[in-house]
Length: 270
Image 1: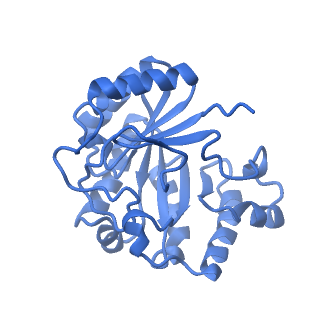
Image 2: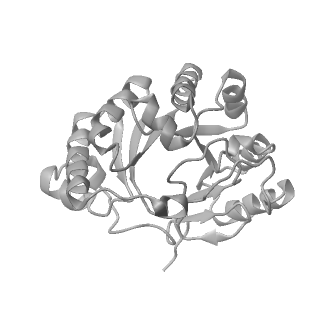
Image 3: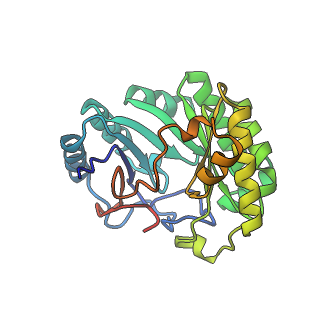
């Protein structure tokens, strides 16, 4: 059976300006990332990806990818190879010049992390006072420049009750999608307590409803949540998310991850 990857997530750096409680990479505040691929080596990786699937989607993330000095150079190189390049960022470094550079270098979309409608929780979770204000301001800048973005939310026992409000805020900010991720306890996240089975079920049940409520306006999707399809089949068998749904995780078949050092794993959590 041919497993050609169509989605590649690449942690291009471990450098980060935040210290998120759940970080699977255990990213650190460093000016230079130890052992990271050089620009030359990174371009060779891009060449290899393009040779396997030149239409693949390449997600450049971190750490905080914008802290890598050659980030735009790599983005342009990958885009010129035909890859669809998107970027995962915490949003705190987005300003007009940066977003304009991203667009010129071929970035087609952005995933931006938001974990609460309250700045106090988001800032504590992300490890930086003022992070919420900078992140939401970044969304406004992306919208102003017409660069599509999605909001990425990590569900924890402390914020699961406000998921509906976060999704509403994402819509109001102009997001194309709200992706709801369920905590995978790796990296720094292994010290965190996950939500209870009851909270998990309640959240997934709400997401089925939200997916229907926002249909045609904004996509609402559960990520790393294998029980979502079970609940969706039961509550909304006409859900768009069920059309062409896979029978399981695509890690190692249609998806893989590249570490800052150039190693390949089926999934970022491995």
